[in-house]
Length: 196
Image (cartoon, rainbow, N blue to C red; front, top):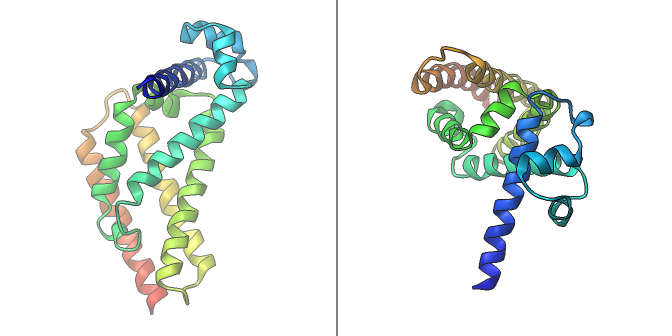
């Protein structure tokens, strides 16, 4: 029981630190954010911060890892080869996950850090999809597939960032449907070309 309480407290503290960094990154670059800035925003003391992280950069790395892991947990529930033919369920699931965490949504849309974070996220996601497709179609042109999936992943993520930044965004469901239609049409052509 004690271990469970400590784990819950640890998760809560780490999340508070991450949220503080994401909040600060809207107005400051990562090299301008100090541990003191983070501890004040998270309402913790420095010793508590150092129980969990060694630096602000380590907090950012944890945010990146956590976000990527969460995305892949969701993606892994779907068949990555068939999913792009009907990506609406995945796009909706990913967006709902982002909506659960408003500081993260603001981090993605307004942060001075997200310009370096998003390309890493796109690459991780692209590599995963390419790997899964190559497992199913080992004779495929991997270079072509890498370019095609990178193009589609970048497009979808950029559309979502624009949606998050919009002052008068369209309904989430409409956005998901439009993005799903575009992706599925492009992906259908890709699968046709690699399967022959």
